[in-house]
Amino acid sequence: MKLTGKTVVLGVTGGIAAYKACELASRLRKAGAEAHVIMTKNACEFVAPLSFETLTNHPVVTDTFARPETWEVEHVALAKKADIFVIAPATANIMAKMACGIADDMLSTTVLATKAPVLVAPAMNTGMWESAATQENVQTLKKRGVHFVGPEGGYLACGDSGAGRMSEPEAIFDAICGILCPVQDMEGLNVLVTAGPTREALDPVRYITNHSSGKMGYAIAEAAQKRGARVTLLSGPVQLKAPAGVEVVDVLSTQDLYERMMERCDQQQIIIQAAAPADFTPVAFAEEKIKKDESGGMILQLKETQDVAKAVGKRKQKGQVLVGFAAETEKVTEHAKGKLAKKNLDMIVANDVTRPGAGFNVDTNIVTFITADGMEDMPQLSKADVAQMLLDRAMKLYRKK
Ligand code: PMT
Image (tube, rainbow, N blue to C red):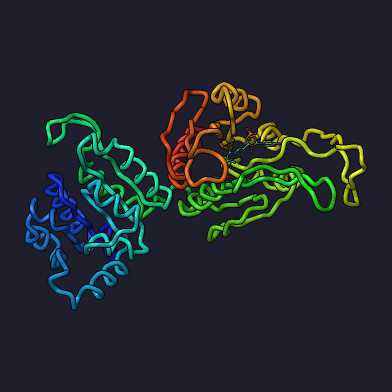
């Protein structure tokens, strides 16, 4: 069974969709998971705890204030036991508490204490979902790595129509499986990812660089490794921990990146270039620190660096998939399409780096996937989610070759 040996803590909050959580609990049990349910006081108004107790074969945790002697033990124990923490349905209220770190009942306390991945399935009235407060809370939680499934659009119990319906139990179950048992569809593939900035030295103490933190590339490398690929990460100077199981090759300048890339690119099935290599480098490197000379300024002469992606594109191997990024500030898709063609890429991931929540040195990105066949605009997502979507598309292209 798919989830044998896995412990799922299912938090149920007060909403009409609480009845659907019964089906989810039943699916989890049938898939071999051990499910423990925590219900808020309001959730108990919609569904009786006994329903979940019968479906999961475990006592349901509700209001622990009635049993203060078990409070500590219970919330810490379940928080530690969880392989995944799911909240379905999740009201605007529980998301607000999670975003602020409020722990005033068993569910909010336990989810605050857990180190397990958290998946939230929101369900609420459209107005509540679309409110600035809820949307800000969602973004805060996403930035912290909380996973979301839904909400869906459609007819709501309150009579309104719009976004706010909880995803179906099947979709929530699939999202749980996706987190607990990631696909191994990249097994046996060599994947090379580039990440971070480069530094172009002027003299022994100064250099030209950019704002890249490496987060985007590192998220891709980590995701590909978890999907079974042998991953090489050519990394500019960043402050990130190497993802487990990934071979990291440090590079400093664009020339370094070019050389390390040329040594390795022919052996790769997929190459994803998320690095931000400098396009220009000083014509000359001053051996000693450049001094001020009372002239009031200096003219720095630069020359173009190697275009690494273009060089890889020129020697593209049969069956190889090449993915580039385009960091743009205007005419985003137009410029990105130009780079797709010029660098002989199979896909380019365009990001408008001027948008809040996108591009350099943030935990989220807003991207458009562009191939010869078309374009797909994505909403603001965590870089981990962008990485998964990018790999899904790269694998599709790889299978087609
Ligand atoms: O690192 P983060 O802080 O997470 O930020 C992520 C990011 C903004 C760096 C990333 O999402 C991104 O957009 N990476 C590409 C940055 C860039 O150099 O874009 P570009 O449009 O200038 O280059 C297009 C492509 O050519 C890129 O794949 C780039 O890696 C490559 N390139 C660029 C210059 C060069 N000399 N050689 C190259 O290979």
